[in-house]
Length: 556
Image (cartoon, rainbow, N blue to C red; front, side, top):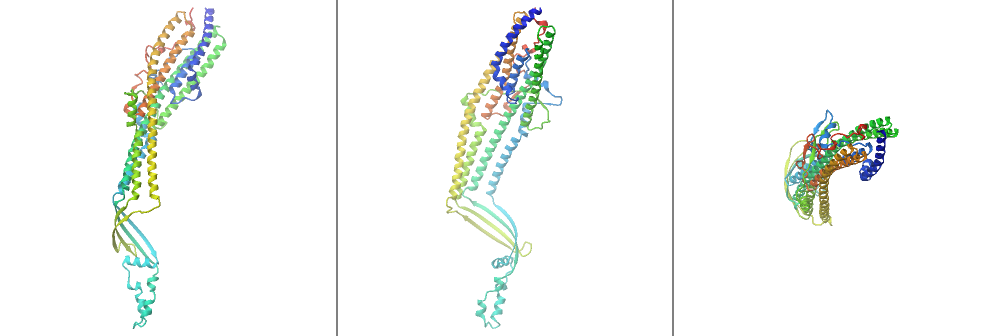
Protein backbone atom coordinates (compact mmCIF):
# COMPACT_ATOMS: atom_id res chain seq x y z
CA UNK A 1 0.00 0.00 0.00
CA UNK A 2 2.89 2.34 0.80
CA UNK A 3 4.43 1.79 -2.62
CA UNK A 4 1.12 2.41 -4.31
CA UNK A 5 0.66 5.62 -2.34
CA UNK A 6 4.20 6.76 -3.18
CA UNK A 7 3.55 6.36 -6.88
CA UNK A 8 0.27 8.20 -6.48
CA UNK A 9 2.01 11.01 -4.60
CA UNK A 10 4.73 11.31 -7.26
CA UNK A 11 2.06 11.54 -9.96
CA UNK A 12 0.31 14.25 -8.03
CA UNK A 13 3.53 16.17 -7.48
CA UNK A 14 4.16 16.40 -11.23
CA UNK A 15 0.55 17.27 -11.94
CA UNK A 16 0.45 19.90 -9.23
CA UNK A 17 3.43 21.72 -10.76
CA UNK A 18 1.53 21.98 -14.02
CA UNK A 19 -1.61 23.02 -12.17
CA UNK A 20 0.27 25.70 -10.25
CA UNK A 21 1.64 27.13 -13.49
CA UNK A 22 -1.82 27.17 -15.02
CA UNK A 23 -3.33 28.91 -12.01
CA UNK A 24 -0.61 31.50 -11.97
CA UNK A 25 -1.23 32.43 -15.59
CA UNK A 26 -4.96 32.71 -15.04
CA UNK A 27 -4.73 34.78 -11.85
CA UNK A 28 -1.53 36.70 -12.43
CA UNK A 29 -3.25 40.08 -12.65
CA UNK A 30 -5.33 39.47 -9.51
CA UNK A 31 -2.42 38.21 -7.43
CA UNK A 32 -0.13 41.02 -8.60
CA UNK A 33 -2.72 43.62 -7.61
CA UNK A 34 -3.08 41.99 -4.22
CA UNK A 35 0.65 41.86 -3.54
CA UNK A 36 1.38 45.42 -4.70
CA UNK A 37 -0.30 47.24 -1.88
CA UNK A 38 -2.45 47.07 1.23
CA UNK A 39 -6.09 46.18 1.12
CA UNK A 40 -8.41 49.14 0.86
CA UNK A 41 -12.15 49.63 1.11
CA UNK A 42 -12.32 50.23 -2.64
CA UNK A 43 -10.81 46.82 -3.59
CA UNK A 44 -12.03 44.31 -0.99
CA UNK A 45 -13.40 41.85 -3.51
CA UNK A 46 -10.14 41.88 -5.46
CA UNK A 47 -8.22 41.00 -2.30
CA UNK A 48 -10.78 38.32 -1.42
CA UNK A 49 -10.54 36.78 -4.89
CA UNK A 50 -6.75 36.77 -4.82
CA UNK A 51 -6.44 35.18 -1.44
CA UNK A 52 -9.04 32.47 -2.10
CA UNK A 53 -6.94 31.29 -5.03
CA UNK A 54 -3.62 31.78 -3.27
CA UNK A 55 -4.93 29.56 -0.48
CA UNK A 56 -6.15 26.91 -2.91
CA UNK A 57 -2.72 26.82 -4.54
CA UNK A 58 -0.51 26.99 -1.44
CA UNK A 59 -2.36 24.70 0.96
CA UNK A 60 -3.49 22.03 -1.46
CA UNK A 61 -6.90 21.68 0.15
CA UNK A 62 -10.34 22.94 -0.78
CA UNK A 63 -11.82 25.57 1.48
CA UNK A 64 -15.30 26.51 2.55
CA UNK A 65 -15.95 29.79 0.74
CA UNK A 66 -17.39 32.37 3.11
CA UNK A 67 -20.86 33.63 2.41
CA UNK A 68 -21.21 37.40 2.75
CA UNK A 69 -24.77 36.84 3.84
CA UNK A 70 -24.08 34.36 6.61
CA UNK A 71 -20.48 34.86 7.71
CA UNK A 72 -20.14 38.60 8.17
CA UNK A 73 -21.57 38.40 11.63
CA UNK A 74 -18.95 35.89 12.84
CA UNK A 75 -16.45 38.61 13.71
CA UNK A 76 -18.87 40.70 15.75
CA UNK A 77 -17.60 41.95 19.05
CA UNK A 78 -19.79 41.59 22.07
CA UNK A 79 -20.11 45.35 22.57
CA UNK A 80 -20.72 46.27 18.91
CA UNK A 81 -24.17 47.30 17.75
CA UNK A 82 -25.73 46.36 14.44
CA UNK A 83 -25.55 49.05 11.76
CA UNK A 84 -27.93 49.02 8.81
CA UNK A 85 -27.17 50.80 5.55
CA UNK A 86 -29.91 53.38 6.21
CA UNK A 87 -28.47 54.11 9.67
CA UNK A 88 -25.02 54.55 8.13
CA UNK A 89 -26.43 56.96 5.54
CA UNK A 90 -28.29 59.00 8.14
CA UNK A 91 -25.19 59.20 10.34
CA UNK A 92 -23.17 60.47 7.40
CA UNK A 93 -25.79 63.02 6.33
CA UNK A 94 -26.08 64.46 9.83
CA UNK A 95 -22.48 64.28 11.05
CA UNK A 96 -20.12 64.35 8.07
CA UNK A 97 -18.24 67.69 7.80
CA UNK A 98 -19.00 67.76 4.06
CA UNK A 99 -22.68 68.32 4.81
CA UNK A 100 -21.87 70.97 7.39
CA UNK A 101 -19.85 72.83 4.77
CA UNK A 102 -22.70 72.50 2.27
CA UNK A 103 -25.19 73.84 4.80
CA UNK A 104 -22.88 76.78 5.51
CA UNK A 105 -22.98 77.71 1.81
CA UNK A 106 -26.79 77.65 1.90
CA UNK A 107 -26.81 79.87 4.98
CA UNK A 108 -24.41 82.26 3.24
CA UNK A 109 -26.74 82.52 0.24
CA UNK A 110 -29.72 83.13 2.51
CA UNK A 111 -27.78 85.91 4.20
CA UNK A 112 -27.10 87.53 0.82
CA UNK A 113 -30.84 87.49 0.02
CA UNK A 114 -31.62 89.05 3.36
CA UNK A 115 -29.01 91.74 2.73
CA UNK A 116 -30.35 92.56 -0.74
CA UNK A 117 -33.94 92.71 0.51
CA UNK A 118 -32.93 95.02 3.34
CA UNK A 119 -31.30 97.46 0.94
CA UNK A 120 -34.70 98.12 -0.61
CA UNK A 121 -36.19 99.35 2.68
CA UNK A 122 -35.65 102.64 4.53
CA UNK A 123 -32.67 102.83 6.87
CA UNK A 124 -32.58 104.65 10.19
CA UNK A 125 -29.18 105.69 11.54
CA UNK A 126 -28.36 107.09 14.97
CA UNK A 127 -25.06 108.83 15.49
CA UNK A 128 -23.35 110.75 18.30
CA UNK A 129 -20.21 112.81 18.12
CA UNK A 130 -18.20 115.43 19.99
CA UNK A 131 -15.93 118.05 18.45
CA UNK A 132 -13.81 121.00 19.62
CA UNK A 133 -12.32 123.70 17.39
CA UNK A 134 -10.99 127.28 17.29
CA UNK A 135 -11.74 127.65 13.57
CA UNK A 136 -13.78 130.81 13.15
CA UNK A 137 -16.37 129.28 10.83
CA UNK A 138 -16.70 126.08 12.87
CA UNK A 139 -17.02 127.91 16.16
CA UNK A 140 -19.65 130.28 14.78
CA UNK A 141 -21.55 127.32 13.28
CA UNK A 142 -21.45 125.41 16.57
CA UNK A 143 -22.80 128.44 18.41
CA UNK A 144 -25.58 128.81 15.85
CA UNK A 145 -26.53 125.12 16.22
CA UNK A 146 -26.46 125.49 20.00
CA UNK A 147 -28.47 128.73 19.91
CA UNK A 148 -25.63 130.64 21.64
CA UNK A 149 -24.73 133.16 18.91
CA UNK A 150 -24.83 136.82 20.11
CA UNK A 151 -24.13 140.26 18.60
CA UNK A 152 -20.83 140.33 20.40
CA UNK A 153 -19.79 137.32 18.27
CA UNK A 154 -19.90 139.79 15.35
CA UNK A 155 -17.70 142.34 17.24
CA UNK A 156 -20.50 144.81 18.14
CA UNK A 157 -18.94 145.81 21.46
CA UNK A 158 -15.55 146.33 19.84
CA UNK A 159 -17.22 148.45 17.12
CA UNK A 160 -18.88 150.84 19.58
CA UNK A 161 -15.70 151.22 21.59
CA UNK A 162 -13.66 152.11 18.53
CA UNK A 163 -16.37 154.41 17.07
CA UNK A 164 -16.45 156.53 20.27
CA UNK A 165 -19.38 158.00 22.18
CA UNK A 166 -20.23 160.39 19.39
CA UNK A 167 -19.36 157.97 16.54
CA UNK A 168 -16.59 160.38 15.55
CA UNK A 169 -14.40 157.44 14.45
CA UNK A 170 -17.13 155.59 12.63
CA UNK A 171 -15.14 155.07 9.40
CA UNK A 172 -12.19 153.64 11.32
CA UNK A 173 -14.36 151.37 13.48
CA UNK A 174 -16.13 150.04 10.40
CA UNK A 175 -12.86 149.09 8.71
CA UNK A 176 -11.35 147.22 11.68
CA UNK A 177 -11.84 143.38 11.73
CA UNK A 178 -13.80 142.03 14.73
CA UNK A 179 -11.49 139.98 16.98
CA UNK A 180 -14.34 137.97 18.56
CA UNK A 181 -15.47 136.75 15.12
CA UNK A 182 -12.07 136.12 13.53
CA UNK A 183 -10.33 134.76 16.63
CA UNK A 184 -13.08 133.18 18.73
CA UNK A 185 -10.97 130.83 20.84
CA UNK A 186 -11.74 127.17 21.53
CA UNK A 187 -15.34 125.93 21.53
CA UNK A 188 -16.81 122.41 21.70
CA UNK A 189 -20.07 120.79 20.61
CA UNK A 190 -21.85 117.45 21.25
CA UNK A 191 -24.13 116.43 18.39
CA UNK A 192 -26.74 113.64 18.31
CA UNK A 193 -28.28 112.80 14.89
CA UNK A 194 -31.14 110.58 13.78
CA UNK A 195 -31.20 110.07 9.99
CA UNK A 196 -33.80 108.30 7.84
CA UNK A 197 -32.74 107.28 4.29
CA UNK A 198 -35.31 106.06 1.75
CA UNK A 199 -34.09 104.52 -1.55
CA UNK A 200 -36.37 105.49 -4.43
CA UNK A 201 -34.56 104.32 -7.57
CA UNK A 202 -31.12 102.81 -8.00
CA UNK A 203 -31.11 101.80 -11.64
CA UNK A 204 -32.06 98.19 -10.88
CA UNK A 205 -28.96 97.57 -8.79
CA UNK A 206 -30.78 96.34 -5.69
CA UNK A 207 -33.21 94.13 -7.60
CA UNK A 208 -30.28 92.66 -9.55
CA UNK A 209 -28.43 91.93 -6.34
CA UNK A 210 -31.48 90.18 -4.91
CA UNK A 211 -32.04 88.11 -8.06
CA UNK A 212 -28.39 87.09 -8.02
CA UNK A 213 -28.58 86.08 -4.36
CA UNK A 214 -31.73 84.02 -4.98
CA UNK A 215 -30.07 82.21 -7.89
CA UNK A 216 -27.01 81.51 -5.77
CA UNK A 217 -29.28 80.08 -3.06
CA UNK A 218 -30.83 77.68 -5.56
CA UNK A 219 -27.34 76.75 -6.73
CA UNK A 220 -26.25 76.12 -3.15
CA UNK A 221 -29.30 73.94 -2.54
CA UNK A 222 -28.53 71.92 -5.68
CA UNK A 223 -24.93 71.67 -4.53
CA UNK A 224 -26.15 70.43 -1.16
CA UNK A 225 -28.19 67.74 -2.93
CA UNK A 226 -25.15 66.77 -5.00
CA UNK A 227 -23.02 66.56 -1.85
CA UNK A 228 -25.62 64.34 -0.18
CA UNK A 229 -25.69 61.96 -3.13
CA UNK A 230 -21.91 61.87 -3.34
CA UNK A 231 -21.77 61.09 0.37
CA UNK A 232 -24.35 58.31 -0.04
CA UNK A 233 -22.14 56.75 -2.73
CA UNK A 234 -19.19 56.86 -0.33
CA UNK A 235 -21.27 55.17 2.36
CA UNK A 236 -22.43 52.45 -0.06
CA UNK A 237 -18.83 51.87 -1.18
CA UNK A 238 -17.51 51.65 2.38
CA UNK A 239 -20.41 49.53 3.63
CA UNK A 240 -20.11 47.03 0.77
CA UNK A 241 -16.34 47.06 1.26
CA UNK A 242 -16.73 45.91 4.86
CA UNK A 243 -19.00 43.13 3.60
CA UNK A 244 -16.17 41.86 1.42
CA UNK A 245 -13.59 42.45 4.15
CA UNK A 246 -15.57 40.19 6.50
CA UNK A 247 -15.52 37.51 3.81
CA UNK A 248 -11.78 37.96 3.43
CA UNK A 249 -11.28 37.41 7.17
CA UNK A 250 -13.33 34.22 6.97
CA UNK A 251 -11.30 32.99 4.00
CA UNK A 252 -8.01 33.51 5.81
CA UNK A 253 -9.36 31.86 8.97
CA UNK A 254 -10.37 28.80 7.00
CA UNK A 255 -7.02 28.93 5.23
CA UNK A 256 -5.26 28.77 8.60
CA UNK A 257 -7.33 25.75 9.58
CA UNK A 258 -6.59 24.06 6.27
CA UNK A 259 -2.87 24.86 6.58
CA UNK A 260 -2.85 23.28 10.04
CA UNK A 261 -4.55 20.19 8.64
CA UNK A 262 -1.98 20.07 5.84
CA UNK A 263 0.87 20.34 8.35
CA UNK A 264 -0.62 17.56 10.49
CA UNK A 265 -1.16 15.38 7.43
CA UNK A 266 2.40 16.01 6.23
CA UNK A 267 3.70 15.13 9.67
CA UNK A 268 1.78 11.85 9.70
CA UNK A 269 2.97 10.96 6.21
CA UNK A 270 6.55 11.89 7.13
CA UNK A 271 6.45 9.65 10.21
CA UNK A 272 5.16 6.84 8.00
CA UNK A 273 8.02 7.42 5.57
CA UNK A 274 5.74 8.34 2.70
CA UNK A 275 7.08 11.89 2.14
CA UNK A 276 10.38 13.62 2.85
CA UNK A 277 11.01 16.09 5.65
CA UNK A 278 11.05 18.94 3.14
CA UNK A 279 7.27 18.53 2.70
CA UNK A 280 6.82 18.93 6.46
CA UNK A 281 9.04 22.02 6.53
CA UNK A 282 7.15 23.53 3.59
CA UNK A 283 3.84 22.93 5.36
CA UNK A 284 5.13 24.71 8.49
CA UNK A 285 6.36 27.67 6.44
CA UNK A 286 3.03 27.75 4.62
CA UNK A 287 1.16 27.80 7.93
CA UNK A 288 3.19 30.75 9.17
CA UNK A 289 2.56 32.63 5.93
CA UNK A 290 -1.18 31.96 6.09
CA UNK A 291 -1.34 33.06 9.74
CA UNK A 292 0.39 36.31 8.80
CA UNK A 293 -2.11 36.89 6.02
CA UNK A 294 -4.95 36.23 8.42
CA UNK A 295 -3.59 38.96 10.70
CA UNK A 296 -3.33 41.24 7.68
CA UNK A 297 -6.95 40.47 6.86
CA UNK A 298 -7.99 41.47 10.38
CA UNK A 299 -6.02 44.70 10.07
CA UNK A 300 -7.60 45.40 6.70
CA UNK A 301 -11.07 44.87 8.16
CA UNK A 302 -10.23 47.37 10.89
CA UNK A 303 -9.02 49.82 8.22
CA UNK A 304 -12.26 49.35 6.29
CA UNK A 305 -14.28 50.11 9.42
CA UNK A 306 -12.15 53.19 10.06
CA UNK A 307 -13.05 54.35 6.57
CA UNK A 308 -16.75 54.02 7.32
CA UNK A 309 -16.18 55.78 10.65
CA UNK A 310 -14.72 58.74 8.77
CA UNK A 311 -17.51 58.83 6.20
CA UNK A 312 -20.19 58.72 8.90
CA UNK A 313 -18.38 61.28 11.05
CA UNK A 314 -18.64 59.18 14.23
CA UNK A 315 -15.93 58.68 16.89
CA UNK A 316 -13.48 55.86 16.26
CA UNK A 317 -14.28 54.26 19.61
CA UNK A 318 -17.93 53.77 18.61
CA UNK A 319 -18.17 50.08 17.74
CA UNK A 320 -20.55 48.74 15.10
CA UNK A 321 -21.11 45.69 12.92
CA UNK A 322 -22.86 45.82 9.55
CA UNK A 323 -25.92 43.59 9.44
CA UNK A 324 -27.34 43.99 5.93
CA UNK A 325 -26.62 43.22 2.29
CA UNK A 326 -27.14 46.12 -0.13
CA UNK A 327 -29.42 45.79 -3.16
CA UNK A 328 -29.89 48.48 -5.84
CA UNK A 329 -32.47 48.02 -8.57
CA UNK A 330 -31.60 48.35 -12.24
CA UNK A 331 -32.34 51.71 -13.84
CA UNK A 332 -35.19 51.27 -16.30
CA UNK A 333 -35.24 52.66 -19.83
CA UNK A 334 -32.57 53.12 -22.48
CA UNK A 335 -29.19 54.82 -22.41
CA UNK A 336 -30.58 57.86 -24.22
CA UNK A 337 -33.37 58.14 -21.67
CA UNK A 338 -30.80 57.93 -18.89
CA UNK A 339 -28.81 60.76 -20.46
CA UNK A 340 -31.90 62.93 -20.79
CA UNK A 341 -32.76 62.18 -17.17
CA UNK A 342 -29.26 63.21 -16.10
CA UNK A 343 -29.57 66.52 -17.97
CA UNK A 344 -32.86 67.27 -16.22
CA UNK A 345 -32.07 65.93 -12.78
CA UNK A 346 -28.34 65.89 -12.09
CA UNK A 347 -27.86 68.36 -9.21
CA UNK A 348 -24.44 69.50 -10.38
CA UNK A 349 -25.81 70.47 -13.79
CA UNK A 350 -28.76 72.18 -12.11
CA UNK A 351 -26.35 74.09 -9.87
CA UNK A 352 -24.46 75.39 -12.91
CA UNK A 353 -27.74 76.43 -14.56
CA UNK A 354 -28.56 78.46 -11.48
CA UNK A 355 -25.06 79.94 -11.44
CA UNK A 356 -25.75 81.17 -14.99
CA UNK A 357 -28.93 82.85 -13.72
CA UNK A 358 -26.87 84.48 -10.99
CA UNK A 359 -24.31 85.70 -13.53
CA UNK A 360 -27.09 87.22 -15.67
CA UNK A 361 -28.39 89.09 -12.64
CA UNK A 362 -24.84 90.22 -11.94
CA UNK A 363 -24.65 91.74 -15.43
CA UNK A 364 -27.96 93.53 -14.87
CA UNK A 365 -26.75 94.87 -11.55
CA UNK A 366 -23.47 96.05 -13.11
CA UNK A 367 -25.32 97.99 -15.83
CA UNK A 368 -27.20 99.97 -13.18
CA UNK A 369 -24.17 102.28 -12.88
CA UNK A 370 -25.27 103.92 -16.16
CA UNK A 371 -28.61 104.97 -14.62
CA UNK A 372 -29.46 107.73 -12.12
CA UNK A 373 -29.91 107.00 -8.43
CA UNK A 374 -32.59 108.83 -6.41
CA UNK A 375 -32.84 108.78 -2.61
CA UNK A 376 -34.79 110.72 0.03
CA UNK A 377 -33.55 111.65 3.47
CA UNK A 378 -34.86 113.18 6.70
CA UNK A 379 -32.63 114.08 9.62
CA UNK A 380 -33.02 115.45 13.13
CA UNK A 381 -30.03 116.86 15.04
CA UNK A 382 -29.40 117.87 18.65
CA UNK A 383 -26.45 120.16 19.47
CA UNK A 384 -25.25 121.15 22.92
CA UNK A 385 -22.13 122.48 24.55
CA UNK A 386 -22.64 119.84 27.25
CA UNK A 387 -23.84 116.24 27.08
CA UNK A 388 -27.56 116.17 26.52
CA UNK A 389 -30.44 116.34 24.03
CA UNK A 390 -30.96 120.04 23.33
CA UNK A 391 -31.49 122.48 20.49
CA UNK A 392 -33.08 120.14 17.98
CA UNK A 393 -33.23 120.91 14.26
CA UNK A 394 -34.68 119.15 11.19
CA UNK A 395 -33.48 118.56 7.65
CA UNK A 396 -35.29 116.92 4.72
CA UNK A 397 -34.13 116.49 1.15
CA UNK A 398 -33.92 114.47 -2.04
CA UNK A 399 -30.67 113.48 -3.74
CA UNK A 400 -30.19 112.65 -7.42
CA UNK A 401 -26.85 111.09 -8.39
CA UNK A 402 -26.01 110.39 -12.02
CA UNK A 403 -22.48 109.65 -13.06
CA UNK A 404 -21.91 111.19 -16.49
CA UNK A 405 -18.25 110.48 -17.26
CA UNK A 406 -15.79 108.10 -15.63
CA UNK A 407 -13.35 107.29 -18.47
CA UNK A 408 -14.20 103.56 -18.76
CA UNK A 409 -14.65 102.58 -15.13
CA UNK A 410 -18.32 101.63 -15.58
CA UNK A 411 -17.78 99.83 -18.88
CA UNK A 412 -14.96 97.82 -17.31
CA UNK A 413 -17.27 96.76 -14.51
CA UNK A 414 -19.91 95.60 -17.01
CA UNK A 415 -17.34 93.82 -19.18
CA UNK A 416 -16.11 91.91 -16.16
CA UNK A 417 -19.66 90.76 -15.33
CA UNK A 418 -20.29 89.67 -18.95
CA UNK A 419 -17.02 87.74 -19.00
CA UNK A 420 -18.09 85.92 -15.83
CA UNK A 421 -21.37 84.97 -17.50
CA UNK A 422 -19.57 83.60 -20.56
CA UNK A 423 -17.17 81.63 -18.37
CA UNK A 424 -20.08 80.03 -16.51
CA UNK A 425 -21.73 79.07 -19.80
CA UNK A 426 -18.52 77.40 -20.95
CA UNK A 427 -18.33 75.60 -17.63
CA UNK A 428 -21.86 74.34 -18.18
CA UNK A 429 -21.06 72.93 -21.63
CA UNK A 430 -17.97 71.14 -20.35
CA UNK A 431 -19.93 69.70 -17.42
CA UNK A 432 -22.65 68.43 -19.77
CA UNK A 433 -20.10 66.76 -22.04
CA UNK A 434 -18.42 65.10 -19.07
CA UNK A 435 -21.75 63.98 -17.65
CA UNK A 436 -22.88 62.42 -20.94
CA UNK A 437 -19.63 60.48 -21.10
CA UNK A 438 -19.97 59.35 -17.48
CA UNK A 439 -23.55 58.19 -17.97
CA UNK A 440 -22.60 56.14 -21.03
CA UNK A 441 -19.55 54.63 -19.37
CA UNK A 442 -21.39 53.77 -16.17
CA UNK A 443 -24.40 52.42 -18.07
CA UNK A 444 -22.21 50.02 -20.03
CA UNK A 445 -20.23 49.04 -16.93
CA UNK A 446 -23.45 48.24 -15.04
CA UNK A 447 -24.71 46.15 -17.97
CA UNK A 448 -21.41 44.29 -18.10
CA UNK A 449 -21.46 43.67 -14.34
CA UNK A 450 -24.99 42.30 -14.60
CA UNK A 451 -24.02 39.96 -17.44
CA UNK A 452 -20.92 38.89 -15.56
CA UNK A 453 -23.02 38.14 -12.48
CA UNK A 454 -25.36 35.90 -14.48
CA UNK A 455 -22.39 34.14 -16.04
CA UNK A 456 -20.75 33.51 -12.66
CA UNK A 457 -23.99 32.06 -11.30
CA UNK A 458 -23.94 29.53 -14.13
CA UNK A 459 -20.22 28.90 -13.61
CA UNK A 460 -20.80 28.13 -9.92
CA UNK A 461 -23.55 25.66 -10.74
CA UNK A 462 -21.40 23.89 -13.31
CA UNK A 463 -18.31 23.91 -11.09
CA UNK A 464 -20.28 22.44 -8.19
CA UNK A 465 -21.45 19.56 -10.37
CA UNK A 466 -17.94 19.03 -11.74
CA UNK A 467 -16.52 18.94 -8.22
CA UNK A 468 -19.15 16.46 -7.10
CA UNK A 469 -18.37 14.13 -10.00
CA UNK A 470 -14.62 14.47 -9.48
CA UNK A 471 -15.01 13.57 -5.81
CA UNK A 472 -16.87 10.43 -6.81
CA UNK A 473 -14.11 9.52 -9.29
CA UNK A 474 -11.44 10.15 -6.65
CA UNK A 475 -13.27 8.03 -4.08
CA UNK A 476 -13.45 5.20 -6.63
CA UNK A 477 -9.73 5.44 -7.30
CA UNK A 478 -10.03 6.48 -10.95
CA UNK A 479 -8.89 10.08 -10.51
CA UNK A 480 -6.01 11.89 -8.83
CA UNK A 481 -5.77 14.49 -6.11
CA UNK A 482 -4.45 16.92 -8.74
CA UNK A 483 -7.65 16.66 -10.77
CA UNK A 484 -9.78 17.04 -7.67
CA UNK A 485 -7.85 20.13 -6.54
CA UNK A 486 -8.13 21.58 -10.04
CA UNK A 487 -11.93 21.29 -10.09
CA UNK A 488 -12.08 22.61 -6.53
CA UNK A 489 -9.89 25.59 -7.52
CA UNK A 490 -12.21 26.34 -10.42
CA UNK A 491 -15.15 26.39 -8.03
CA UNK A 492 -13.16 28.68 -5.70
CA UNK A 493 -12.43 30.96 -8.62
CA UNK A 494 -16.07 31.02 -9.78
CA UNK A 495 -17.36 31.86 -6.31
CA UNK A 496 -14.77 34.55 -5.72
CA UNK A 497 -15.52 36.12 -9.08
CA UNK A 498 -19.24 35.98 -8.28
CA UNK A 499 -18.60 38.03 -5.12
CA UNK A 500 -16.53 40.48 -7.14
CA UNK A 501 -19.24 40.76 -9.80
CA UNK A 502 -21.87 41.32 -7.12
CA UNK A 503 -19.77 44.06 -5.55
CA UNK A 504 -19.13 45.73 -8.91
CA UNK A 505 -22.82 45.59 -9.81
CA UNK A 506 -23.75 47.40 -6.59
CA UNK A 507 -21.17 50.13 -7.15
CA UNK A 508 -21.94 50.62 -10.85
CA UNK A 509 -25.68 50.85 -10.26
CA UNK A 510 -25.11 53.29 -7.40
CA UNK A 511 -22.82 55.39 -9.61
CA UNK A 512 -25.42 55.39 -12.39
CA UNK A 513 -28.04 56.64 -9.94
CA UNK A 514 -25.58 59.34 -8.88
CA UNK A 515 -25.05 60.58 -12.43
CA UNK A 516 -28.81 60.71 -13.07
CA UNK A 517 -29.44 62.50 -9.76
CA UNK A 518 -31.47 59.67 -8.22
CA UNK A 519 -29.12 58.33 -5.54
CA UNK A 520 -31.37 58.97 -2.56
CA UNK A 521 -31.64 56.82 0.60
CA UNK A 522 -34.94 55.28 -0.54
CA UNK A 523 -33.24 54.03 -3.73
CA UNK A 524 -31.12 51.62 -1.66
CA UNK A 525 -32.69 48.46 -0.28
CA UNK A 526 -31.12 45.77 1.87
CA UNK A 527 -31.72 42.35 3.37
CA UNK A 528 -30.47 41.05 6.74
CA UNK A 529 -27.17 39.22 6.65
CA UNK A 530 -28.49 36.42 8.85
CA UNK A 531 -31.20 35.40 6.41
CA UNK A 532 -29.82 36.24 2.98
CA UNK A 533 -27.15 34.30 1.13
CA UNK A 534 -25.02 36.23 -1.29
CA UNK A 535 -23.94 33.14 -3.22
CA UNK A 536 -26.23 30.88 -5.24
CA UNK A 537 -26.80 27.23 -4.32
CA UNK A 538 -25.26 27.70 -0.90
CA UNK A 539 -26.96 24.67 0.62
CA UNK A 540 -25.93 22.45 -2.31
CA UNK A 541 -22.42 23.80 -2.36
CA UNK A 542 -19.41 21.54 -2.16
CA UNK A 543 -18.15 24.06 0.38
CA UNK A 544 -20.67 22.97 2.97
CA UNK A 545 -17.94 20.89 4.64
CA UNK A 546 -14.16 21.27 4.28
CA UNK A 547 -12.77 18.55 2.07
CA UNK A 548 -9.73 17.59 4.16
CA UNK A 549 -7.89 14.59 2.74
CA UNK A 550 -6.34 12.12 5.20
CA UNK A 551 -4.12 9.10 4.67
CA UNK A 552 -7.07 6.76 5.24
CA UNK A 553 -8.78 8.19 2.12
CA UNK A 554 -5.95 7.23 -0.23
CA UNK A 555 -7.19 4.65 -2.78
CA UNK A 556 -5.98 1.14 -2.08
